[in-house]
Image (cartoon, rainbow, N blue to C red; front, side, top):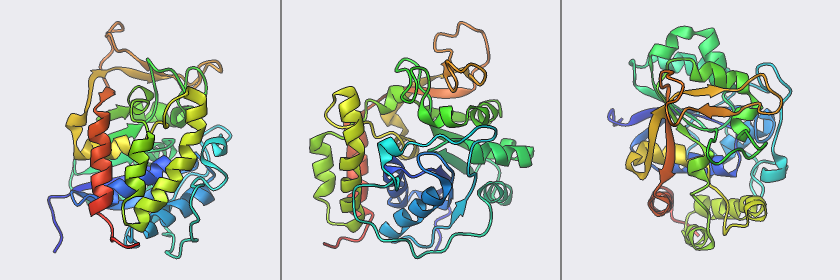
Length: 320
């Protein structure tokens, strides 16, 4: 029997090993009702992100979760990808079977619009793990959905921490700043997980070994993904492990007290080549502009990894 108390979410994503961790965390959590997964071009091109989303669903033994392909590139710009971080497939690390579950025929933005209109107002949360192109297209096609979305929880941007693709910009916002500008101006409640938070959530050796010791196929595959994924940031930042960005979005839905921040005005730089995609966060309230996002800055990293590890342990079939 369906549990009507579950929180309805749509995961908009460009998998990506850290996206995989976020999706697995969501699928392992009975509090969440994943209505669907919408793929967008970002870390790798769309054909691979759509493939990878289905691979992750099959790792989780959740072929019932529909996957929709969306935008193959930004609204107005050439696509920038991140194979240098994620590998050619986006999920480099483990040996993974090709997915057997079918793609949905419906376009991702159309699915987002339909889901928001068919469900009760303020009942659907959009979990954005990649560039915001699909959500911007949905808002363009059906502006009336803005007043019906419960909130958008997104991984993107940075302020005190700077950027990770340029000195000023985080990758997801940099890839499609025009889409991000549309989303941040939409009036939808936004919770923003910037690099300021995600750079505090590191896949240390101890943490990844705990995941590797879990018995499920999903957990073992994820541990191998993380070993590949972290090598780029370990070299870049000189840390034990790399930032695990995207699962912060799902962890917030499950345990919001793990995070702290404040309401701020956030604007997106779309004109300057020097600072393209910068999230200009008015942390100190100097502009007098109305706040449009809850910007997180701190996280209980140990609590985050305890949540992730425990859900990976209990959420999937225990088989060697």
